[in-house]
Each structure stands twice: as C-alpha cells, then as structure tokens.
Image 1 (cartoon, rainbow, N blue to C red):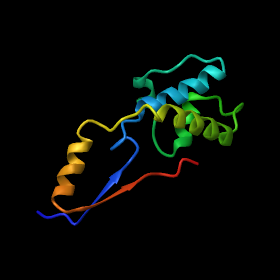
Image 2 (cartoon, rainbow, N blue to C red):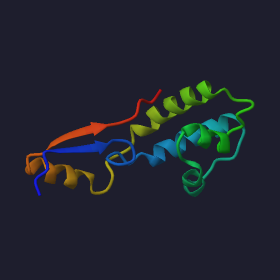
Image 3 (tube, rainbow, N blue to C red):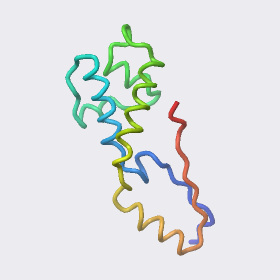
Image 4 (cartoon, one colour):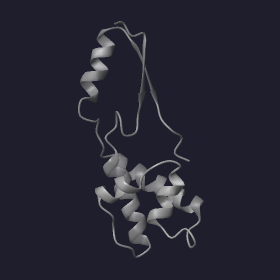
Length: 111
C-alpha cells in the first residue's frame, strides 16, 4: 500500500515528553507545598479537556486556571529540552521518507 501523506502527532507520539509533563506538574505542586505525583497517578488523571486533570491534581478554588496553564507551559518548555524522540519514531519517519510519503507533524497550541 502506498501512502502519499502521513500525519504525526508531536507531543507524546514522536516526542517522548511524558517526563517533561510530569516534571512540570511536580514543580507546580512543589510551589504549592504539595507532594509530587508519580507517573501512575499522572496517567490516571490525564485526559481531555485538560481542565479535568488540573481539577484532580490542584485546588482549583485557590488556583486560577490561566495561572496554572502559564506555569505548566513554562515548566514544560524547560523540561522538554531534555526530551528525545519516542522509541521507534526515527525508524518510522525514515521508512515513510524512503517510500516517498510527505510527512506532516501537528501539535496542539501550548497556550
């Protein structure tokens, strides 16, 4: 089968960034004097809309959603610098490139 286009998701698919996301959340919890969460708890809570995640992890009565988003994005940007590609991402990209497929990477806006 010939593929003309392959559309990739960046965060969590090509980029192995769950560690950066978790580290950013834990930085924010530390700022609030709260205990960090582990990856298991992070995965239990994560979902869409993202507000539901924050409602499970933070005290939304005392934290403005926009402040949480701003803090998360700043922390994520710092921690993401240490992230690499997910296992198997580079070979998959190369396979489709060799087959002549155009590849597009999409991601959500961090704001």
